[in-house]
Image (cartoon, rainbow, N blue to C red):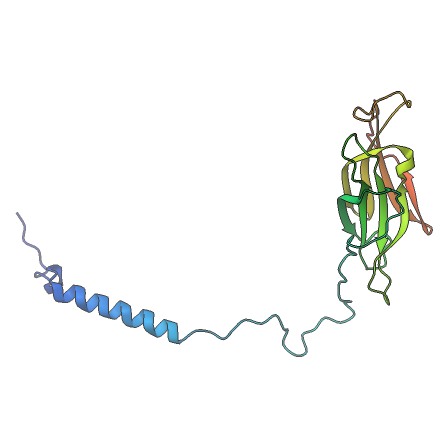
Length: 192
């Protein structure tokens, strides 16, 4: 057997004093680090670093308290879905809401409304009706994407079709053009 060229190291045999010294050193580091904390973070930008010509992003209009043009009689209106986006390119987001009456039974028809808020007024208001509840359709697959409103409309071929079971399905797309929302059917639309 060959002998090691390095003599036995003194610290290879641990004793209780070694553990006490290690624990004391770690406790000192922890205590010192709790005293030397960085200052609180702030969201403020340093002076002179503010972006220029960048308007503050306005929040999209909320649907709370909006008087939708929907006659529900004694029952309340229900906002079934909503999405927001800048539909007219003015830099302020609009909110599109799918709304129906709170019917206890059956499937009530949906209305799809565009809400906006003018720069000088805080209250949102309805500026366009994309789907009128009088058309007796329900809405699914609803989204706002790339400045367009997309939805699948479920309707009925006749008044004899029960409201639980729509037999016509149509994909629809609305975009803002020349001061109005124009409806088109997206490519690959389906109908049954």
